[in-house]
Length: 233
Image 1 (cartoon, one colour):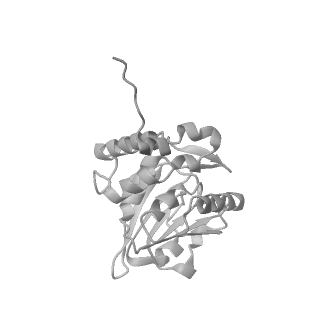
Image 2 (tube, one colour):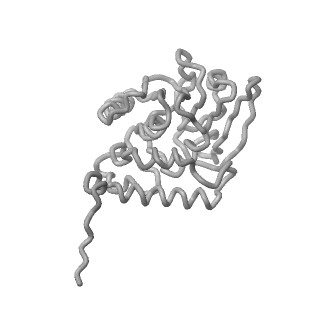
Image 3 (cartoon, helix red, strand yellow):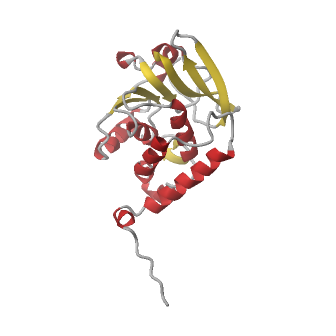
């Protein structure tokens, strides 16, 4: 008997649905393996739902869309990359955001990370220092209907004081140190995830927490490799 596979309605509408599901399965396997000093060995269901919804293929160059759901970073031009899905997932998970939280991202890049966060919060903010990339990404996010994201061109080292304080801050470029303006703009009780280190040395992903009394604590999570945070500072 000849068996013919008939695509589901979801797969017919979204030809990338199966690849996205496979990507999430690979991420969850890595999380369960317990790499690094992470708080949990599973992803929040809200994070999984966001990853399942955001079309990663839209955030990579057309000639790389075939590889969009592989669990690895990809070049996006301007000397930048879209982060490995696993890294996006664990950084998002570590922020522990709630719907009403105000979130700031430093380093918009392709827009994928802020799109994932925008699925979880009512309002998200992002800063990109490379003007052509920022304009390109802003157009893409608007086309995809992410109307709850505010994006500006500027030096993310100094944060976005106009909209501070933030419940959560995520930095997607490596700094030599934790930027003091970002610590200042982090709300008491808030969390920041930031890679620290230089391009040619081991970088560490750090979890920064500010207590209700304003006291700062940091914890090393795992070694990572990010493009450097640029700007005049």
